Image 1 (cartoon, one colour):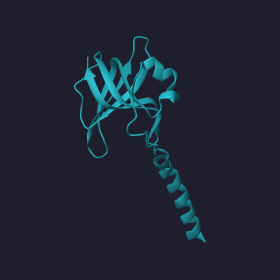
Image 2 (image 1 turned 135 degrees about the horizontal axis):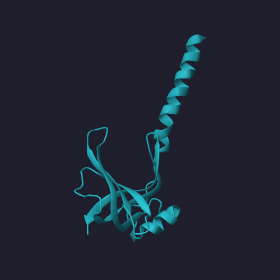
Image 3 (image 1 turned 45 degrees about the vertical axis):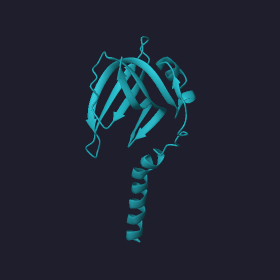
Image 4 (image 1 turned 180 degrees about the vertical axis):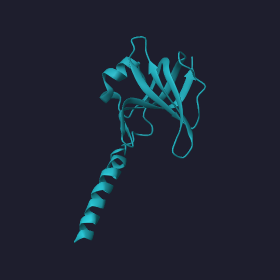
Length: 134
């Protein structure tokens, strides 16, 4: 009886730990979706309209951070702001981008109104495919 209770407890804890990973699954958008030229203000004010879509937008880099994934692969995360202080989060995988706070950039990538990473939920984030200093 005690072993059964231990097993049930283990399964309950395991399901709590694994559920964020299961919820992080995304429904991919169609591969040939068009890239929408938008403003940061538009995306922030109507995130549901752009969720899962490819967007291209311009702004000023507000904060840059360089990190490594759990596999040791480098990536860059930064905040992108417009002149009205609307902002989105951006991440770029596979390298450390040569950008600095204050740089004006144009990015293209897929927008998510909410993205889950382990136990964290991040709102208004773009997985960038390209980042160009302008």
